[in-house]
Amino acid sequence: MDTPIVGRFAPSPSGRMHLGNVFTALMSWLSVRSRGGRWILRIEDLDPQRSKPEHARRICDDLDWLGLDWDEGGVDGRGPNGPYCQSLRHDIYARYLERLRATGLCYPCTCTRADILATQAPHASDGRVVYGGRCRPAVLPAPWHEPERPAAVRLWTSGRTVSFTDRTYVKRTVRLDRETGDFILRRADGAWAYQLAVVVDDALMGVTEVVRGADLLDSSAQQIYLYELLGLQAPEYAHVPLICNAEGHRLSKRDAGTDMESLRREMSPRRLVGHLAALAGLVDPGTEITPAELARSFSWSRLPATPAIRL
Image (cartoon, rainbow, N blue to C red; front, side, top):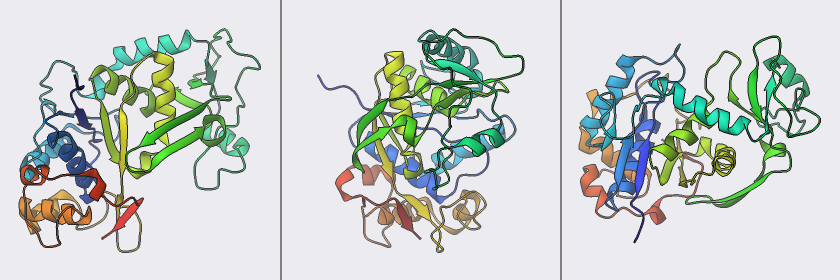
């Protein structure tokens, strides 16, 4: 018997969605609905300074306006696997962090960002910061010693290689210590790191497929490593192209005219969905269509295998 498809869209409520966010949501929804699966809307509000309840409500309203319905989650948190807001899942993350600490592969790190930049691997020339191991114990597994000042929790990655197949970018092999370095599970201020939270949430919510932007492709290897350590089943991954502006820069919530407030003034839902579907190669330019109509003929093989699509 085939495993039911469960997908999710997990926006951060730090502002109004832009065209790139909606593109990812649409591709995820189409992949799930075309195969009769369930779609979860999770609110990733780990950052209390930037996350606002009103932004979460607008995200739900915009998805509803577009015709992208969900089976679990949202601001009302309906469904059996809640809470669906990450800010309410502290105790859950704490339990799984303790499981990781029990492996002896975690250690406290008191490095500041300046310390890390001063000792990062010299090949990290694309903007990624690869931790150089300043606080790493000489031998692992090592007993946990609480430092005198607040410390982040890092996970040892030395010698670990992760291979996975992405639906868009085919097979990838990542040597974690060289390409990502020992990564943080919980920050020194107590905030949960994205890598741990997303793994725990996807596993406990039964997610079998993660569709997200190509900018998150490199994080997949870190997450698969966590799945292995926790004895959890990793989902399949499909990373979709980023929507870029005319200058070739990825869209942000600051790009004028590409946020949902502007788009809803200028376009009907059918026109906006058709525009995004045309960017994905699913329909001809100028087509107006609903997500439900698109789902009847959706195929991953039609999407461009490129990291970005320029408007």
